[in-house]
Length: 484
Ligand SMILES: Nc1ncnc2c1ncn2[C@@H]1O[C@H](COP(=O)(O)OP(=O)(O)OP(=O)(O)O)[C@@H](O)[C@H]1O
Ligand SMILES: [Mg+2]
Image (cartoon, rainbow, N blue to C red):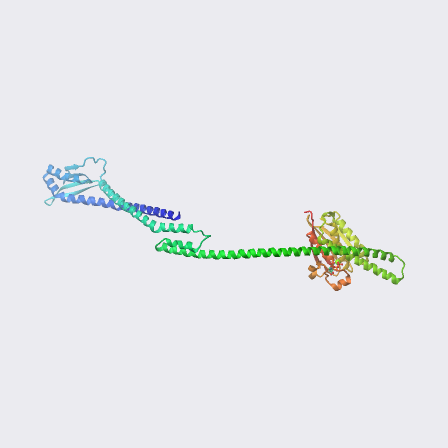
């Protein structure tokens, strides 16, 4: 648990700090106490020499060996003294005392003091001192001091640890346990109240109060969220039910519309076919009558009948093409573009010649593609028809090129009146003509571009119009190769 780790860490840090402090203390004491101890040892010897000086002076003056030996032996009780020499004024040895077993001890220093008797210098006392004993004593002192303060440190530490454990770590653990056991998904105000059971002091009490306030706020938010969720769920269910009803209604309406559309298409189909049969016989009879020798007045009437019949037949064919595109799919196959374009162009050769227009076809006879040749023929028929219809002089040029293995572009250029590009977007809509006044003159119901537009859409292609300079129109038909 985090708080347990916390108290462990705290304890470890305390131990570490204490050890370091004691270590520092020991180093400091070693650096100060040992020189001090040596100084104190030296001062002690000086004092002793001071007190023994009269006795030594007298023994030296009298050359009394037994007395001087007795006095010199006094130094035995001072462990730092290695040896004492009594010398006369010519530095001749009078007597000496040496400590036993001091071979391995290196003298720290040798000092000598002047001896005088009745105000006259009579010799010296020389003492060899060792500092080992002083250092040992000082070290023992330091170690016992540091040991004692370490012991006190450990006791303080244990005491501190116990206090921290009781006052800080344990309350935090209790707090953490309560917070951990609270189910945050089901949090309610009573969960926050359970914190009151534990009594804390000082900052931990503040911490507890803050956590309690946060939990109360959280519980409130959770309750609000739950209410919103319930409302949302209700709204969602309501919406789903409404969408279901609306979808059913729409499906019924769609079915109705489809049935309506189908019956309209069926009606148009049968109507146009029904119209075509009598019209074909009218055309047949008018053709026979045209070849007869009739009075001029009758001849004009027969020509009128024939012309009107031809126009009506074209309109009926257009309606059939238009209706056929409603639900008929493209019949995709590999075909020669040259064959389709040249066959369609050929149909209009006579009309173009009649209007003194030059018809030019620039198509590579090896060009082939996948698509619906019949539908392409219909589209081309309407575009060539327009080009011839809206051109009074000049030429109509049909080109075809392969942009890539996927795209074929067919271009139709005329030198006619030009197209109103502002209205071009609407032109592919059924029965829309750029200029109704003009088209009355040019005849037509405005189905051509609508049929081309539908074929293009089914083919996933595009149609573009452009006005040429100085006059004329260019129509670009971009068709994808449907096999890819
Ligand atoms: N090559 C063109 N040059 C000038 N205007 C054109 C050309 N092609 C189409 N238009 C304009 O677009 C209009 C719509 O053409 P669309 O072929 O749909 O109808 P239409 O030719 O008038 O009638 P329909 O094709 O049914 O006989 C035309 O009335 C005409 O104003
Ligand atoms: Mg047309």
